[in-house]
Structures are given as C-alpha cells and as structure tokens.
Length: 88
Image (cartoon, rainbow, N blue to C red; front, side, top):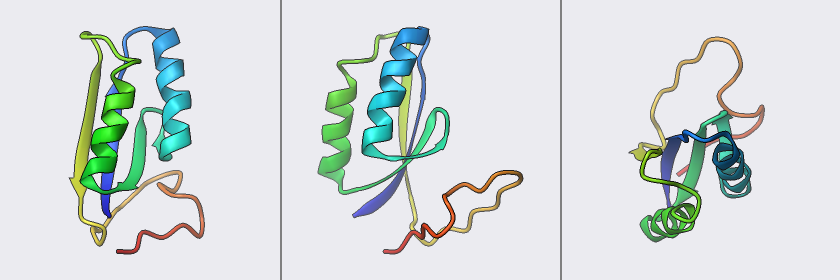
C-alpha cells in the first residue's frame, strides 16, 4: 500500500459536488478538493477509471504519490482527524 494525495479542479458545480461525494466514500478529505488515499497502484488506477465517469476535458484531476513517513507542517486546522496516523 502507498500513500497518495488526490486533488481536483472541477469546472461545473454539479459535477464538483458529485466528484466530492464520490471521493468522500473512497478517501479521507484533507481540504474540499484534496484527499488522502491509501492504496496500491491498481487501487489508484481503479479509482481513476471510476472518476472518468464524472469528469470532462475541462476538469483537472491529479494524483501524487507521497512517502508515508514524510514530514507535514500545517497552519490552522489539522490535516488529518485527531488520532489518525499514517503508518507503513
């Protein structure tokens, strides 16, 4: 399993809401259009195939693999819910 950050910019508000609802079922929201996902490569590919049904050419979806042990600094609200840890 790997740790991924998925983010998106969806141009149309109805599609944006649909994508957000879908993503909330699959990954941990970090910000409104940014999600933390723990999956293998095939899991990410499967998720992107499902997302294709929601997006149009004008939209932008990006997935970044990150190191599970990376150092994260935040200001304001916590990036993860209290008590949730990333372990590899």
